Image: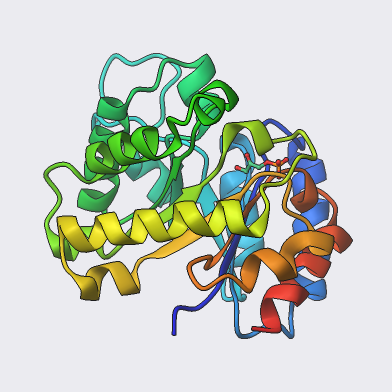
Length: 253
Ligand code: 13P
């Protein structure tokens, strides 16, 4: 049985004081949840303080991006070691907003995955098709290209440390959630592809989150699908009660 994993991607929300206040409330509200892996991914500026507040709780901390070089003249970038020193355990890589607005490519995503694993961070790697691609019946081609690229050069042991997040771009921030059948179809496709690339064992152990307008009200149907192992949450993770309610649904599995 794969444990469900729910991660909140805060994107560019919350100042330091808002972040501190939020996680202080969150750790109390989530204290009794034991069956689900829970992660919050604040902005870089509040990672360190958030990690200290959540130290020794059931809530892990992740960053939203990293650079693939160790250090150097890369103004504005953040390295894996900086994230580790700020208390991060996870890092989101290749979110569609980074692919769309910040020129991330399949290749840079792969470089970042390699660096994160080398340094001991757990990557949450995002993939997903655009609306035009879905309408053009290209979904599986796009997903296959992204999945093959992100795993390039990884050993089975390294690959086993990843969490994947299928986020159809048309469902992100739109309120237009993928139907459980649409999501399940892609999740099963990704799992089959992992079996082809590595082994059935690996494919059965790697968790695949769904992301895109997921909230407490639609989580049960999505999480009941056999290949949906959690959620990567945007809007619904920004208020303590909506995030709590969603995790409560995950706890029911
Ligand atoms: P929403 O939940 O706001 O649609 O965002 C999903 C997402 O992009 C999480 O990474």
